Length: 444
Image (tube, rainbow, N blue to C red; front, side, top):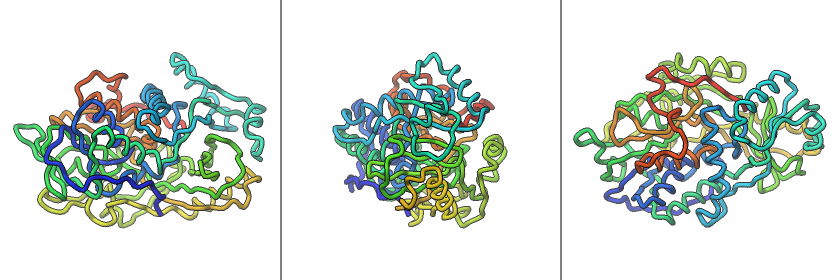
């Protein structure tokens, strides 16, 4: 079942007009609205379900700038800066805790990759570095594992997804943004080649600019409007434990599982790299584009054919703006795939074996989710060349929670006509059509 996410009281009235309509109230949509509202723009966020109801409320909660791909590194640095100041910005606790995060290994090849990454990022002067075996043991005295090395960042940390995005949503509302939950977007209409109105299940909103930040559902909505967005997804599993002894205040990534401490004294545990691909017509169509990513992860993935092929985010569906859309179906309001019980059982057993002091702590809750991805595991953040007034921020490939504030900040700058604070050309929408996808990097 889905984690319990803090409720946000939102508007029941659909405004007649807006400067910008944002589709999706996950972390990227909400932070985009926050920064747009700070610029004095009238922004409306439309969410088919509830704020942070899907992946933004059920991810691991890691917030890191360490081990990012070269394309994402500046965005991760910007995001961490925004995370640190978010409490002050929104006037309430956004949940970020600077605790330090690390990745541990026994593989000399992985250490070499870390060293290469550190050399390539030396100009950023990032804190932390590689720990030797005795330093890892000192940091993790309760582990039964004999780790040979780790890469550690003292500035990284975590936040509770269930409180972070709702808090940011309330902060955006306080600055003038309007959020409407349980209001699915069916599409948009154009006039003289530009977006002129957004059509929802409750009526229309006049606007000139639309940001699609719909997570795994973005490609379906864009395809309805005649725009191809290459997007796939992996169905993942995570769980949280009951409260137990503190073995590390931050987060640790290991070859089998990753974990991080929680405010409630338990741990959120995710199975590193493991998940399920559910076969769908759209997935088959785009299989060639995702071949490099598949070969990178092929030993960690399973495949299944389920009803999600017909009604899930990656199904082929058609509708008219004048009638109900797939987003209005009960199962799609808050898409809640089940956890894989085998992964939960195996992950809990491995966690207890690695930390005997936690034996018997038990699983308090488990859940599933859909991690949407692009072929190069780098998000799209920017304008869509085919449609004047349309922007997309999606395909975050499991990194969206950590880098979401930075993505929202970039989107606000682009939509407002400002020069982005960092180079955003690596996130451009057209790179796949132009044959300029990035090399696939997947550090953790």
